[in-house]
Image (tube, rainbow, N blue to C red; front, side):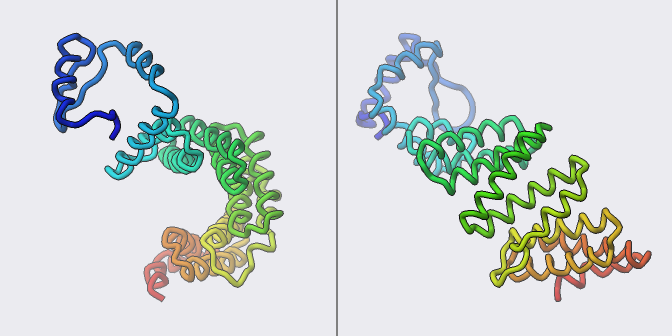
Length: 276
């Protein structure tokens, strides 16, 4: 389906191209693979393919590689080649998050910027805000705190304007974290004093924001307040099944109790909390 030829005729065609030194077989384990001897020839031939056909072929490769379990980093170029905005945005956002978690801020910014530009062109405000958030986080990792803060602030206000509680909490949490790292402690704490920290629906984003508020309180020496924040984070995380945040909130709770009491009992008690 990718070449438009029947499978039976491909082997002889490939053999002929190898004999003419246009292709060479790639050695190594796995299925037989070929590559162009001259990369410039590969690009020239690619440009000869009609654009509609290129999009179809890239879409087919994208679907096949996705089904084979390829990661977003490997899929991005085929998504771009397919010119499907939904695929480009979704794949770029996943690639940005993975790169950020792996500590590769440059790649994270590259993927996030692509998601931002495609979201703007596609007119999808929800995807645009997700992409801008990732771009802000990547900029923060690169030490560009000014531009990062501006983006995170703008995303926070726009998510609140749209009534997206989860999005508002997520952006607010990252904005507050950035302000804290920048040494603006009072601003960081005040940012978390938002109405979205209370609500009937249990949200993992709220649990994370509450845990960050607890950690700020611990680091500020407000241990009794930290215990209350951490307990709320624990309950919220447990209610919505946010396992990782639950573990963090229990650790924060134990740390707050140690600081409050001067006893290691808080840390020793954490395993029993996980089963309550």
